[in-house]
Length: 225
Image (cartoon, rainbow, N blue to C red; front, top):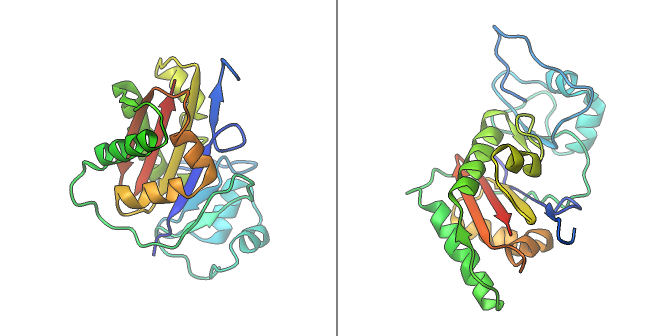
């Protein structure tokens, strides 16, 4: 059973930044890239994975992995199981939930509508959908799913701010919320709004545009202002 996860970035790892104020699935035929320390916080197990393999690849001892994942059976990992690679103070939330196949994929628009409803209730202006930002969000969601990680820092694109720069997206303020495993737009919005860092991004008065993506259980919100 795949767990739900939640994370936000704001310069304290609820990631948002204001200039005005402020891996990979392993294949037998190809060499496997290894790291001296984990490039992200969470890893999703693939077929044939073991704690030894995961630890060796990401520079973590098996004992450390067992300590970080107290409920795990080290002798039996299942496909899609979320393995924590390093401790973090970013307040990532892991409510237990079963993934589900989306009914119709207007999830992105549903999330945008809910974001704007919350903003209006709090006396804020609504956010416009930015096509470039939505495309970036989709690529980030696909990257998290394809490369088996859950983190703001992508092994492919770097930080959200580096990714925005490479996508030629200009901003004065920027932020990102991510989540994994929630089954509906309302469920993921409830999770984000019940977390102070995520809520702060959603209700940030400096933001004017949003890009939202959903891909196979991965949720991404990108904000700029």
